[in-house]
Length: 329
Image (cartoon, rainbow, N blue to C red; front, side):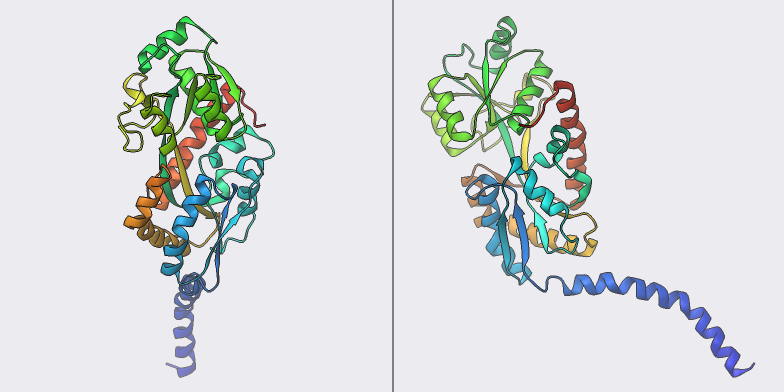
């Protein structure tokens, strides 16, 4: 055979293999090089809040594992929508992440101004899971969930309940509670946890479905408030002694999650590198202990598990928003 022709045949046969190898190289090289500079985590809420506190607990151990500076960048505004929207529009290179909560799945349904949907993000891992609790003022004649439902059905609209605003997670969780129970209560929105706590302690409002805290547990212990139930499927160590609301109101569940996400299109290898590092951080005893002090529990997941939960909540809370005609302030 002609030597020249033989070489040409070998080159032609090798071209598909070379093309496949070349196509794989950019992603592999990208993952190998990442991170080569600081990584920013956008916290779409003010400094000092729960999201910010949890992010800063993770900051130092995550820096050590990644070998790069991790910057916590607070971008509050529009009930978390401003910072989340900025993250959705950031380059999908693994250097800009965002740490939102359930609002990621709620805001696009409640506000036309959200500027993002859950599909604009690549889930990395859930960070924390915090059950809601049902708390009442002692003047309300109910010491358990069943008694509360009986009183509410006999007195429609007579129970005032507090939230931190329209379309907040507490608002949706309470709306879901009403719908599943077949009761009607009156919504009283407040600006922040401080005014809500004061209103509950004075009896200005009688009911609250919110995340638990050391302060809340102390008020319950002192008899200033009553904790009638926890909105997790099983009893929670974060709400000592509280029975699941679902024991009385079948299927009721409302838990706040905090999670880490990247812009959609971030290379899979980079997502997995962050997921692996976060898994190690969230298993550290010191991190777990600090989370518990903030009323939260670490809850690492795979990207797929986190994506599934977001999709389920996107559908479920979207339905509540539409049926109750809830609009963000």
